[in-house]
Image 1 (cartoon, rainbow, N blue to C red):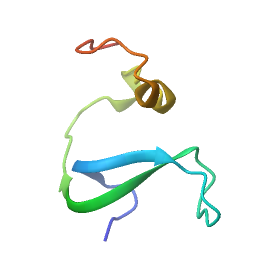
Image 2 (image 1 turned 90 degrees about the vertical axis):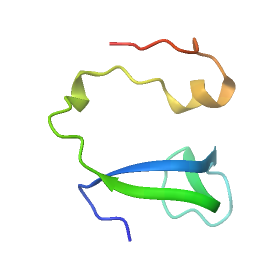
Image 3 (image 1 turned 180 degrees about the vertical axis):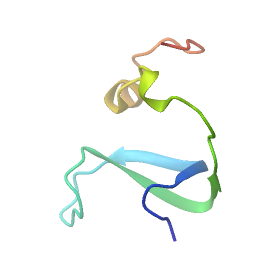
Image 4 (image 1 turned 120 degrees about the horizontal axis):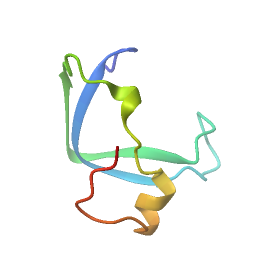
Length: 72
């Protein structure tokens, strides 16, 4: 069970468009867990999350970003 206000490290999942008939939230994309998805709760310590300029999900899906570039 995922807990609100906790941080998780995830591996082996898919990001897909959230355009099905049965949508439980309004975000454009959703995470799909596979049979080999791993989720672990983690502590980021003092990581300043609001200081980063993360790539938008639609840019990741379309491949419109520079690989290996750390922004911010």
